[in-house]
Length: 220
Image (cartoon, rainbow, N blue to C red; front, side, top):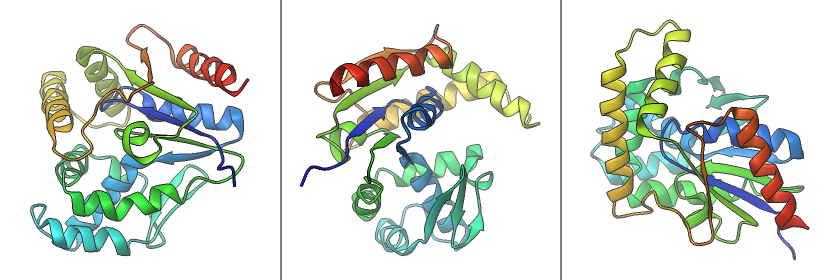
């Protein structure tokens, strides 16, 4: 049986991959998987339940039991809309820490595969092309300079009324990049056969068009 096509988009934090991936999915009528949200959901649930972020076995068990759903752009955990709650910087840091544990990654791998349904899937994350969907028809590594990513995140947070310092965000991104790239399990890397898309000087529309053009070329 032929599996539905997958466009796998990987990249570092705040590179814009989520926005680009969701828009590409909308344009193609494909399903969308924000794999990073899954780790943030585990982070939120573990914090709520008081599970130590260093307790890998318990975090893995928790990840297996979560009831998660994506509906009309909103994210639900055990029936509760947590779309905003999982996007805080604190939850992001916690998610980055627990994403290093094999127990958590194994627990979430099956859930990620379950999103692969007709007519196709656009999945974004850090190991979509390298680990979860190595047979993706199109693999994209979407990136931007650390400065550009920090400025984007700064504008997003300020727009939400969240007070933050650009210098702190820059340092945070540098630390996350180092941790994501050096972890022993599924590190952030450019997958074999992936096309690199540098977006520091591109608009969202330009980035989306590039990915769509690449996909049409592959599909043809």
